[in-house]
Length: 71
Length: 148
Image (cartoon, rainbow over all chains, first blue to last red; front, side):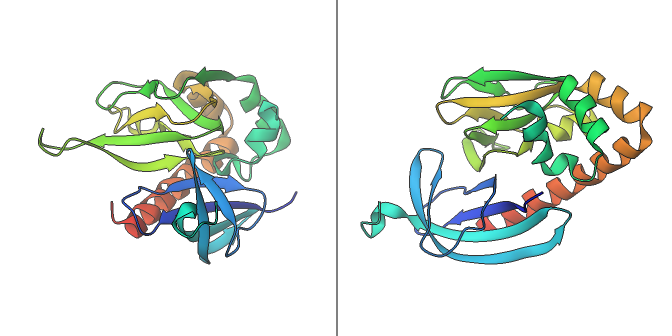
């Protein structure tokens, strides 16, 4: 089975609670993700804790995609 | 994605066997919610655990004082669980959960069915309880990172 990435998304630049979700692909800098209803751009991704089984645990910092015209 | 496919991608069930997953899939039901609809309310008793199948839910905590007001502490997307605290400690719901996307679809497992499955199969029970602890830990780490 392919790896599953459990990602803690933290939004910088605005008061947003962030999000946690699973994805089948490791996010990378520059990616666009939709959290709820709005698009965000990934700024940084780090491994949060060691992998377990098929799961990889990541922390991604994102910013509003419309803050630099990326949306 | 059918129930079994989703359950295979949920951390709560990481490490269970295919037969155990099939058992769990048999006690799940799907519930759909329009955006903004309340799924569980803080302070109420709860008899279910939920898994986000599609979309997002908003986790909202009301403050200890009326002045503090309700505040969204996290959004949970596909594969995330909620309702697990009341499942473990039988206490009241610790937060209000609202559907935050269109569509929002969740899998629901009744506590009675869930506990029966875990009690009849100690391997399943051990794995699930370990994974609930890991999920709560991850949520705490997220909260530490967001500072909320």
